[in-house]
Length: 479
Image (cartoon, rainbow, N blue to C red):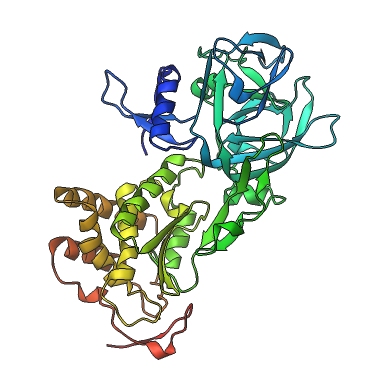
């Protein structure tokens, strides 16, 4: 997405209205809502409301729960990086729709003199002051080696960071919606004992984000986990297991009845068919530019695409595995149940946008609905999946001229993927057949667009199915 955050405090000045729209759209906290401000034709985004319900915020006489803060009434303690605290009246307060919120972080830290760690749940863009440098960074940049500041300027050691979803509400507030100075004067506040930035800092300050040139990778990414081995990757599950089997759900001590659930990576079974052959998926993971794992826009885009396909194919179960970094989509049949799985690794490829994701999901629909080739796995071959997806599934998705407008963008984005992939020998599919070449796949989509027969290079061919076992490879029979 080439869109930028709306400028000139448009988000802050219209926050209550924006949060109302987020509520009506069923958007989660941290989701991005696209707007066109008056007097311009330029699209931009604002973020739906960053502190979880019941987070205690320091006041002159104690603490107040974040949901009880009232604009122009509640007085909180605020400071700049000198940590000289003063009383400030809150100038702005808002909240997001209660419910399950993804892309949240659970952080534990130990204050000096305390025996038990405290906890806080925030959205990924919530700023913290880092000890001893007094730099503000967003929560998704935190490492297990970091220390935060307490009210007296002492270090609070981070002891755990988890990424996942939170059931509850999120709130945000600011002492004022004027741009903070370089010292953040009166815009640093105390949230459950540690120094945070208020909402004005989030709106106006360009805080350092994750980068690939130092150790501050995004929380939950493969690189972050490699640098923080004490916190291993999320639990790996296969699609189809009940959600009740989610492991290690955390009931927050500071928020009665609210639960943080660590993210789970959903993986496709061995007998699944793929949008891309494994060697190309691996090359894209290594070489292609990617959006941050915390960029909610692309998760929203994936949800939107799958919702569209669900209405067209209600007998298929659709899933997103956002934290799965494999650059692919999969389809499979298990015990008669059709399933399509879309990985976050594919959604995050820069330049592979809505139209390209639709092409990938249509391809997986083609595996399940294209002309059967006798496979005991329940999915047809790659060429037939390309052909059916472009010829039928995308025409069902896009009416009339929309089909022509969007599928040409799909093809351009498919070609973009190929530009990142070194020329390698084609992989074998799970029936032991070579994947169609890049050119053959593009020719197949062109034939589908033109209403022409499937090219010979994309034909399924003949396979001795007696040699195949689920998850294994059969023996291709020369035609």
